[in-house]
Amino acid sequence: MDAKLFSVSRRWIATLAIACTFPTLVTANEVKPTPVKVISFGDPMAVDANPQRRTAVVTAVVLSPDGQRLAAAGDDHVVRLFDVPTAKCSHQLRGHDDWIRGLSISSDGKTVVSAAADCCCTSWDSETGEKLCTTTPSAGPLRSVVFHPNGLQFAAAGYQCCARIFNLSGGHQSMQLQSPRNDYTCLAFSPDGATLAVGSADGTLRLFDATTGQLHHEIQVDTRRLRAVAFSGDGQNIACGGDGATVKIFSATAGTLVGQLPTRPAKVFCLKYLKNEQLAVGGSDNRVQIWRPEAPSLVKILEGHTGTITSLATDATGTLLASGSYDTTIRIWNLSETATPKTAGAPATATR
Image (tube, one colour):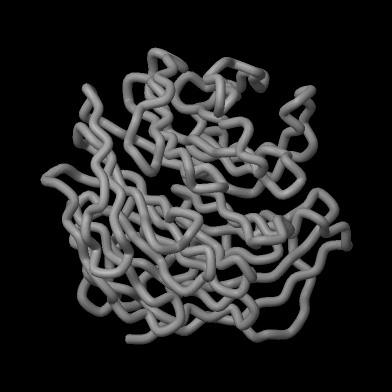
């Protein structure tokens, strides 16, 4: 495929993204909107050794604050860094030996932390791809990792009885947040870094003081697994969802239910508050829904994925939204775009 502009249908774009052997970035925009970029998550470094190897599913995606870089990971144990403007896979970061479930990027965009089922957290330089530090929090597989807003610490949790906070420099543990449960599924820091929210497989949401470790609230959200938690931009509310299919919103200070979105016939895998306090929701119905949660009212539906949407990420402006999926693609949406359909694309190269 060359880099010339050409018109194609959205269905063809989705098929192309899945079929290409190499990671491919395609630009597009549309009123609905369609994604401005589609990345196929192929692994050229594995092709020579195993021609039958399938393309990896995507389970974690993050965007740098300036929207220039994207990091993604999945079940092939590799973190990939993409340069968004040039549509190139700049680095493939190897070091994990099991499924990578969590990614987070620092507030300055310089460092990415990955968490995997190999029980390890690894920090990487997002520009050079250099491995900075590897930490082994526990003997249990990890599911989630999140940077503190100060960019100097991160929290990680998974199949274990506690969440842990680490210093980025050196990877030393600074705090352990104990729980009677041993299956934490999702994490989120409040915008001011004062509170760490932790969701678990038994449907419980716990809000901890991130400085002292004190438990402020324990909320029984559901009887089924929570998969996603997200703080609103002002830190006043926290949204959570999971296998119960209903997104519920709680006061972060009082721990009381303040709202919920209409139930959808799908598991909720990921949540992301946008700059305008709208809430993006992704899940097993292969769609991203964007809501005004206070009413609530549905603003947009982003369609195109053909598998469960597992991860959502935005840039600092909230204009770009990235979605990762079990369909092996990552789509980047321009939420303000209203142009007529057009596409351009070129094969992305990867360092061997």
